[in-house]
Image 1 (cartoon, one colour):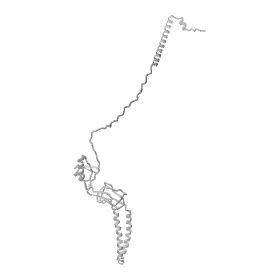
Image 2 (cartoon, rainbow, N blue to C red):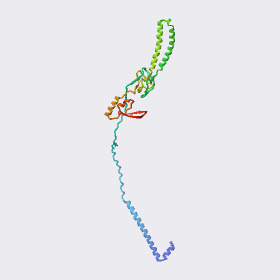
Image 3 (spheres, rainbow, N blue to C red):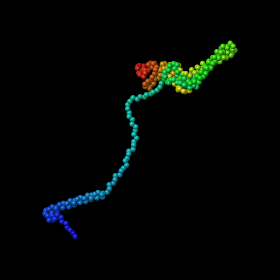
Image 4 (tube, rainbow, N blue to C red):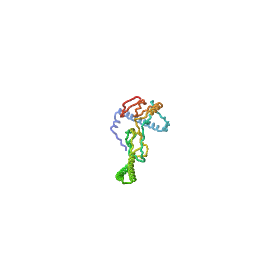
Length: 280
């Protein structure tokens, strides 16, 4: 069974003004045309899209490995500047003294007990340079002195009885007494040799031992020179030859006043300060 529903609009449409019906018909036709146009455009876009999907895939570009050029060894580069070339040479020279002496001990197989100087020290005449270990000799000396005091007492008694004694016995007693006296004198002299002193005022220019060393007789201990009497003329002649052949400048320090006679330029220094300048 079918039932028809009639609405107010449908009644007006069917029963209304013919002009309104015509306008409504035109509106419906426009809507239909717009729908058809939209459907057509949608279909066209689908065709284009599907057509793109049917195209063959493009070949992927082959990735070539990166080629690194070989490293060419770079030659060393040096910065060159123009300047004056200088060569500095340092050395030590020895200016001989007219008075120079090597000091040594005459005692053999002794140990150096004290050493009071070092190279370059100024020493006065008679200054003690060093001493040897002689404690054993000093103890022996004390014993001999005590024994000699006892011998002196006996000798006094012998002298009082001289007239009563046999001359030979008296002479033997006198000789024994003098032997004791001489033994003490000799031992004192040996002990004195254990002290080494400077024979004159000068400078310690060389030192060959250290405190505690074993020392033999006549081994060189030190060298002392009288720096107030230096022989520098020959040295300066050698320097002049070097200057002329090598084209160098030589500077030296000396206490010899005769340097004024041979040097080109002399600077006098006192307490570390230059106080005068003299031309040689």
